[in-house]
Amino acid sequence: MLTGSCLCGGVHYEISGPLRQALNCHCSMCRKAQGAAFRSRATVESAHFRFTQGEHLVRYYESSPGNFRGFCSVCGAPIHSKFSSRPDILSLPLGGLDQDPGIRPACHAFVGSKAPWHQISDALPQYDTLPE
Image (tube, rainbow, N blue to C red; front, side, top):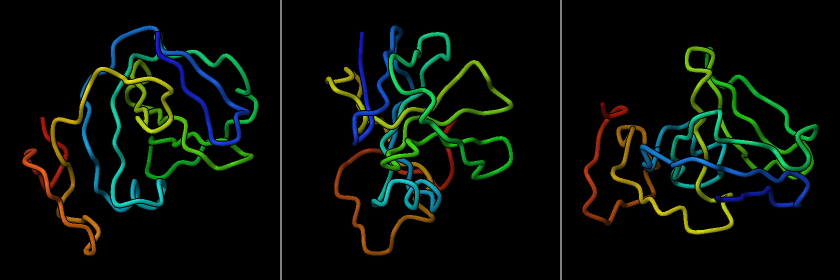
């Protein structure tokens, strides 16, 4: 069981299943949403994600058609993204987790739009789009 929360502690959640497809996303939307050079994220089945506190504090912003980014309405911390086309999957920022998720990013995605001031310095594969 993994747990996570927002910055102010108003929103808490549990993850009861495995995380998959961990990567570092460098797209401009993830950079702006995270306020950082990239977003480290993984996917989890929706059935394995459960709010344990503060679900009423979560607001959603449709950053692109069918992509809804959930965040705490008090502190602004990102919670997860959900997708109209894939309601069975959530995208979860790894930074909100309280424990080691046991998974590591396998690549860098959308490096074609990475922050010009950021230098990728590891040996992970880099892709201009989302890899298969």
